[in-house]
Image 1: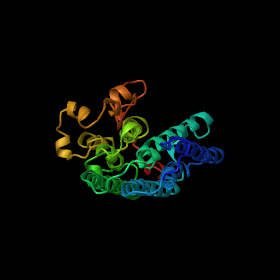
Image 2: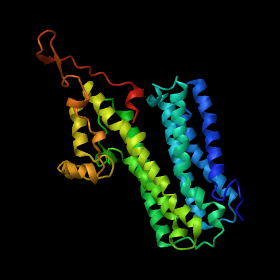
Image 3: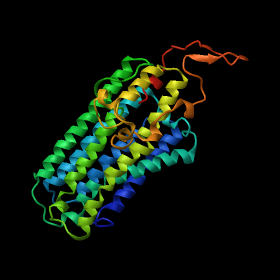
Image 4: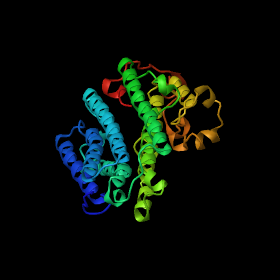
Amino acid sequence: MAAHVLDDYYLGITAIVTVGYQLFFFAIAYACKFDKLTDFAGGSNFIVLAVVTVSLSHPHNGRQLVVTLFLIAWAVRLTSFLFFRILKTGKDDRFDEMRQKFFPFLGFWILQMLWVWTVSLPVTVLNSPAVTRYPQHSFGTGRDIAGIVLYSIGLAIEAISDAQKYRFRSKHDGQAVCDQGLFAVSRHPNYFGEIIVHFAIYMIAVSPAANGFVRGQAFKALYATILGPFFLTFLLLFVSGISLAERPKAKARYEKDNNWSGYKRWLDRTSVLIPFPPQLYEKMPTILKRTVFLEFPMYVFDPKKHSSAPQPGRRVNEGEGEPAESNRDDSPQSGDEHLIE
């Protein structure tokens, strides 16, 4: 029988563990002023919550074990990759403006707490006594199999795209545009894969409720865990993922004349998230790009609106107002700059 700890859904114990775990690493990161443990703390926290909740739940059924192992496998891959990358780059440019400031830096860690706790909800609730007290149907339904297939596709996309981006940045200078492999059909295939992974985990976790084996509040709670993958999608689209990459990177490319023409061609031809053939995406009406393919106006860089810099490759002669050719700086970016995704 599953152990009862604080509440029937393990929401309290997982919240306490998450807050304590993140504050422990925050104290180290702030005191030492380095970034090597930040992503490690986030990814490994998923593993801790999965292990804690499945350990408290007895006896286990196949569905619990599968979703728990799926969350752990995803977290191990992500944590390993990000930890390896930060060891190579040495620092994370995201924290340059906040690393020395207590409250802004703490704000990031609080957001990371919410990310870990919320995205773990499908596994947390499935392992909880509120759900496991009901008889469970055997693992292997059509929904379970579809979830496995979807998870496998998402994890493969995320892992392959991370490897392709890292390999490309390791072999090219900061002027090159990564438009190869999966990045030829999506500007952020790793985020697309991550979203698929967590909707797949939810698809499997909600099966006991969808098939009528779980009733009452537990039924509602399982369905409510869709908050996890939706919150992840919200973060990637509007907070810490695509929104931090799209317009700021385009602005930097334009103002530094860092292969802006090549970068703009890639932007015009490549879907922001959902993989799609570039030949077709380039000709697609803007309304479809903004709606079906989620290329929101907040991502779009318009030099006339968002930059006061002169046209790339040109400068204005002092006192004349006439454009003239500028001396272009073709020196490659530093390792820290060109490895930042």
